[in-house]
Length: 226
Image (tube, rainbow, N blue to C red; front, side, top):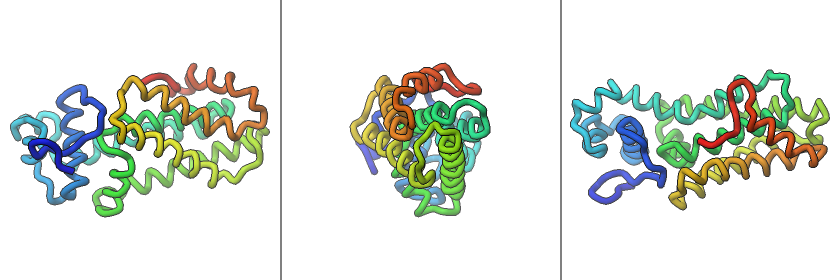
């Protein structure tokens, strides 16, 4: 995973400041060398900073790791809020899937690389699996609610959710692999969410209203550009 001059190779997403640069470099080094084997001095050097400067942003590797994990919790945070809302399940599902694509595209590390890192370093990345399992459970609840309300066709909620998440994960993978531009993220997120939700609707003609509701926002989460 080494890039030019020994710096970790990163995705095509451009960091917007020192903090984001540090997170990007740290995520790549944790994946390449392992969390325990990576030193703060190495992260500072790869970030183009003095070691003393990096502590302005992060006091420890543990804090860095927590920040990296938090970047992958936007869709989970949305699901936690939206699972019990009264709004139509289709709009709620759309919002969560939309945010899932956005968060993964803007994260410093391809989701699949982070997943592999969590598998190889289970103690340090234990929260990764727990977060994913919770996201699946919450989205299954939303899909089941949609089926019960007659919004969705009769489907197996677990199969549908895992397939929908495979779609969002594949979307971000192609974004990272193709060194995508941030300007494209909203369009890709909209396409993935639209495809997943439209396949479930009992009344396909209701899709425009679902998308409009998702873009207008529900409980502070809206399907709008990053």
